[in-house]
Picture 1 (cartoon, rainbow, N blue to C red):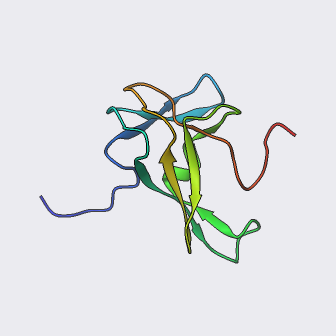
Picture 2: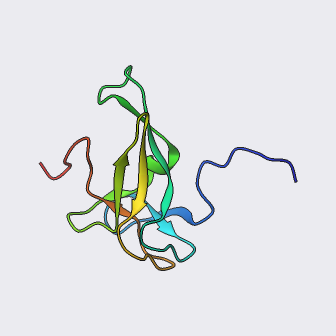
Amino acid sequence: MKDYYKPLPDCVTIKDSSIDGLGLFAIQNIKEGSIIGISHVKDDRCEDGYQRTPLGGFYNYSDNPNCENIVDDNHLLLKTKKDIKVSDEITVKYLLYNPTK
């Protein structure tokens, strides 16, 4: 099979969320400390200085998240804070804004 663009890593999928709209869910167990992928790319043309990737566009906010964004030179990386089991929703405490305010 030829290589092709995959907007999401193999370990996650998008489906209906009980938090808000659509969410990002594990379809494989993911160990604590794993980098799931790039959620945002530095882009000064954007209001907050970052362009979301498909990965960054679908995770939901939580005050008690199971993942975090790690700031890299030109990216925000999505990293697990704890073990995530199949069917768990991926959640993050947003860095760029707080949706609860």
